[in-house]
Length: 104
View 1: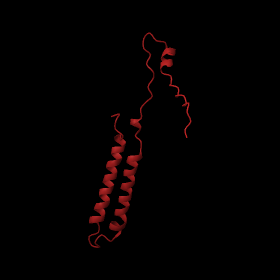
View 2: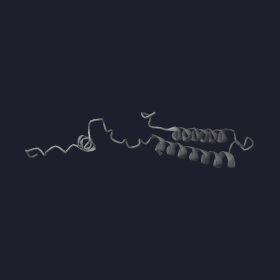
View 3: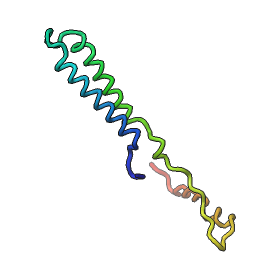
View 4: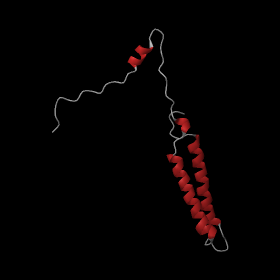
């Protein structure tokens, strides 16, 4: 699962957000039959559930799952090499020299 951007936590949050969105739409659609949806449930509770659902969906996209963070890998010392030789081969490469010409 190293290639996926979302982890299990993100998918759980996405399902919770979708459930809140569905509850908000259903609440606005079927709430308060006597007043044709023009009471607390249809006008206030439904939109609040929708806002909460969209907020959870945003969080599901933006939250980084800790199980996907790669752990640092220790250098492998092969037989026949000393630790100094391995460190020398894993040294960072020096940046390239600046060009000899000037930009206009």
